[in-house]
Image 1 (cartoon, one colour):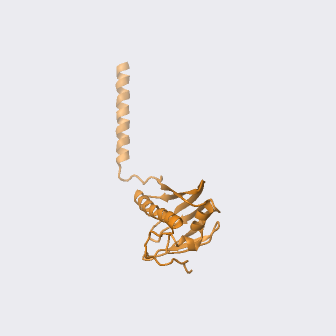
Image 2: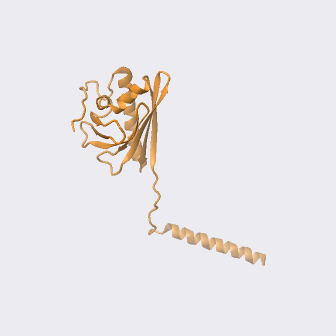
Image 3: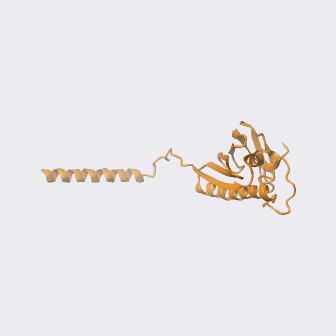
Length: 183
């Protein structure tokens, strides 16, 4: 009797796992409603006080000295921004979602050629004579988009450091003076 019961349990388990495996292999299975989002956090220390660094993040003219070729930003919660790079099609536009002077700046981010919006947050931490800049870019739906963004942000954060500490723009030694974007 025990042997029959054990054999029956094994057969039921086997039938159950086989049916489950067949169901999971069906090509008509609907897409999962779960979406995996990727983010990246980068940090760099800059020899300047937090207010000095924050000014380069939130002032249109100073932004254009290290980041886009042309910039307009309304430095307040709910403010809008427009960035343009020479040689690139379109304008990057978004909304400031967090603004704490000298501490935090966050905004929506959508490149003209990207189908979805992501988020950028910059936080500043005083560390003696330096400021630690922590940039988090979140909302990527692919590792390829995340990797592309990390590469770009790495260059621009290094350029921010170079402009503040050495007054040297790494984008081009012969670069002409940047100017705010004309609306």
